[in-house]
Amino acid sequence: MTTMTLSELWKEFRLLQSAEALSEAERTLIERFLREEHRARERRRIECLLKTSGIGRPKLLDDFDWAFNPKIPRDKILEYLQTEFLKKPSNLVLIGAAGVGKTHLATALCHQAVLQGHQTLFLSLFDFTAKLAKAKNPYTLIEYYAKAPLLCLDELGYVVPSREQADAFFQIISKRTEVRTTIVTTNLIPSQWGKIFDSVTAPALPGPGLGSPASAILDRLSLNGRFIICEGRSYRSKK
Image (cartoon, rainbow, N blue to C red; front, side, top):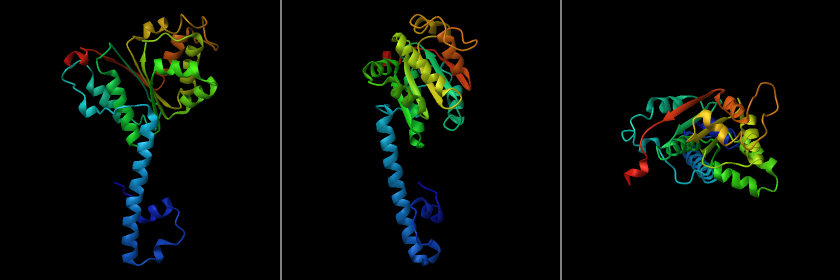
């Protein structure tokens, strides 16, 4: 529910007549109308953000079964949620085997961002590589993902990208460094990232001291970022 004052609502809707010239009854009536209209606008905006986010079926942290996998660090996830990751760059990499709940957690964080009115893009590395393969202008696609306030790349490690796709991935991460928040879920620990990046790219990316492509990507994600290990059983085994 909006907490904006009548004066703030007046500015929001860019009304010309001064609110001070209204009678008390008129002020009450118009304020009620503007509040309802503002709520409707916010609702439509969030619906649009959710539709274009790629989240699909929204998941909530409240629905996550923490008891099933008690080793998943709930305190660290909730601590991250309490940070200003939607205002300040704060990367997050969730690492764990398939089915432990990484995607659920990442989706819930992205859904929370949408509810707060932030543009969010969520897609798997498979979908990312497929979009790049079909793109008439890869640079436009790179810029699109590089500029999203919150970007989540899911399932890194399940697809080996081509050299061009790996380079595009690096360019996106590089452009987002210290500017926007990126969330990644992966089944690979950092030392294994070379399996999907170093084998398909040049020996080293340009720039002083960057080393291998995998280490360059990890270096950028670790700036204002945190890596969280998710251990446990597959939730799919419950079904």
